[in-house]
Amino acid sequence: MVSVVSFGMDPEFNRPVPRVADERYVLLAEWIVTDLGTFFLALLDALAMADEVARGEEPFEEWSSENYEVSFTPSALRIRNLWVPGSQGEFPAETARAAIEDYWRFLAAQPERAGVREYRPDLPEWQASLARWEEKWGRTHPYRGRLFP
Image (cartoon, rainbow, N blue to C red; front, side):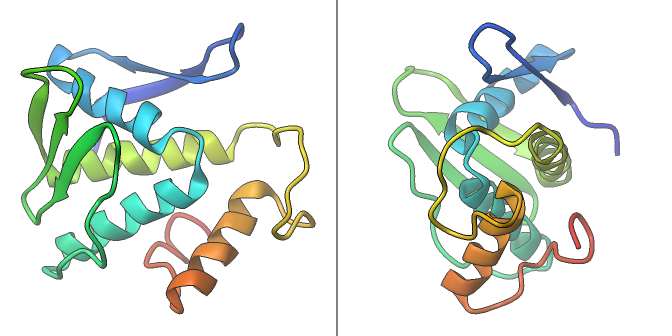
């Protein structure tokens, strides 16, 4: 599936910037770069929830956000910006999942960020976050072996 969102880095602020060819996907792109941001743990949660609903299961937990109301369903990802009246949308589940997967690939390919990490500083940040996610939830992430080793 061709993704509806691509990503780049803002050279001045060193923050992810989404690009969409079709304006219908602006809200999806905004949610990805603002709510998931550069937090691998949040991104791992989104990937797991998208995978679970695709298999007909309930998400392991409700999405929690100060800025967005989000629900993962087998057919769609529903997003409502809590701060912008009328900013809401429904995106086909497969399309949303592909965009989230592409964002993972984009972030994991970025150079390591400077700073001190407490949890598993011996690993790249994405791998440390994956280990932490699996430790927290007591299970293997559903994307292990597909999107990452």
